[in-house]
Image (cartoon, rainbow, N blue to C red; front, side):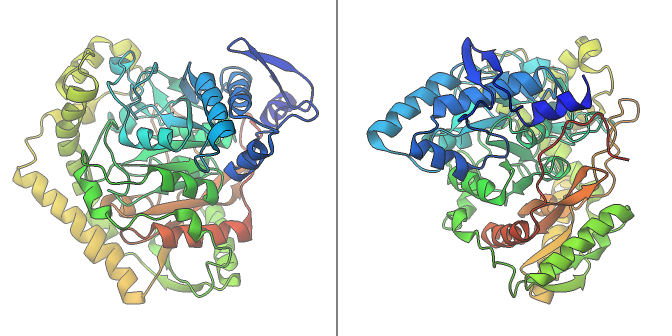
Length: 530
């Protein structure tokens, strides 16, 4: 298929073509039809309030795009499974709107979930693994319950790096044994990053309004950056991890992936909440907010922002993009403080140690409740199943991290406790907190990472440097916003803060977004613009 055809698909071509999806014909950009490309939650709600769009029609339009772009055409392979009840759910929400009015900003809005978030419906929750390919959890994850209560339409699940990228040191992000490889819509031979790979590609391509990703270290913010999105990794405990296939209770969190800061703020607000099943949420009592109230276009004026220079460098073209972003920040009244984030090199090894210890303990707990009817009950079972299905599961990379995790002792071991203490010491009090307090900062900024790399199944990911680990290890919030392009590939700017500073970061990120406007829809090019 030629480049022109890709561009037509990317913009939902302006012809009166009819495509069948689930037996229903949907107009593709006929006169008077609603164009979902780059449409925001506000756009969608305004159309539904005006009566020119319904939740059912909107869901149909996204299903058409999934068929045209994800399952054929560019074949992004971002959506691993569709919800067969999505249209009926949307129709019921339309009836409710007509009778009772709207529940709020997510009423009737189609949402995609990463396929490691449990849903008690006709879809599986597999973490991309054939081990869980037909496993249907007994109940929704807490955040899914919150989204349904807000009126969201769960339209499907997205592909991911298998087991959220904790299986091998030589993995290729965006690949899973159940879902195959997800492609980057900005250059189809480039990587989507991970592990929320499908969520990133899908929202960049407007296959839904918004998506949920999960992150242990970089799995929301990195795919958001390379797919030209806004991604929010919240403070650990702001959102419940109940019902999410785990890696680490010290670092795991879900978070929104969206095309705008405003949409991400809506979604974060809806998902936050106390949950007795996740003890970490207790610390967030009284700290969650309606984050849409912090969408202030003048939010940079007078803000003190630390420029974490030890996370710059490595790519002069990325450097140029971020230096231009600094000029925008200063132009909007921000006070930039040149600094470095201390001790960031002191928790690389101990971070992995903690992840391996907690993976073994946490995954076994998840499998016991949410996959009790499936073929695997423990991490050891997963390892054995993978080995038995080696040709399908391990054609490109192995499971050496799983094997190392299985060999770990319990969470009362000195090795684990020492590693965890080291992580928190150097990422928190002698890291982010130290530099922010010393300089009276509202946030730290740096490039989120480099542009998307070529997918390479021989050597694995080649992502280069990134700014994901400090906030991930500390359990602190991190927001990435589109900052520009390198050879047509998106690059993000990261805002990092202390615990529960989401409101401040959203204010800063929104003000930067509104001043810069770098978000641009993909063209589904075969390769980067060299």
